[in-house]
Image 1 (tube, rainbow, N blue to C red):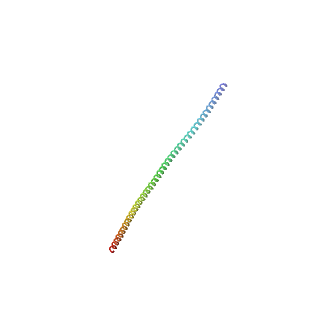
Image 2 (cartoon, rainbow, N blue to C red):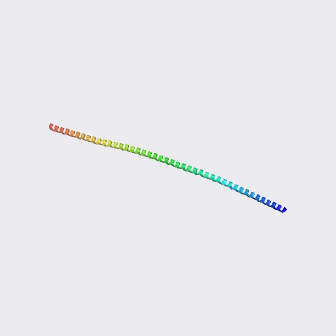
Image 3 (cartoon, rainbow, N blue to C red):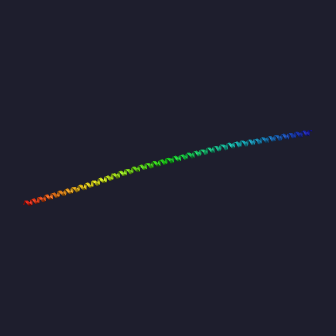
Length: 155
C-alpha cells in the first residue's frame, strides 16, 4: 500500500512536473507569439511610415515638377514678349529710317530741281546778256556806219 501510495505520489509529482513544463512551454510560446506580434506591429508601422514618406516625397516631386513647368512657361512667355518688343522696336526704327530716307530723297530732288532751275535761269540770263551786248554792238556799229556816211556826205 505504501509502495502504491509512493507510486501514486510519484506519478502525481511527475504529472505536476509535466503540467508545470507545459505551462512554461505555453508561456514561452505566448511570449514568442507576443514578441512576433510586437515585431509585426513595429514592421507594419515602419512600412506605413515609409509609404507615407514615399507618398509625401512623390507629392513634393510632382509639385516641384509642376512649379518648374510653370517657371519654364513663364520664362518662355517673358522671352517671347521680349522678342516681340525688340521686333516692334526694330520695325519702328526701320519705319523711322525709311521715312527719314524718303524725306532726304525728297529734299535732294527739290534741291536738284532748284539747282536745275537756277542753272537754266543763269543760262537764260547769260543768253539775254549776250543778246543785249550783241544788240548794243550792232547799234554801235550802225551808229558808226551812219556817222561815217554822214561824214562822207559832208565832204
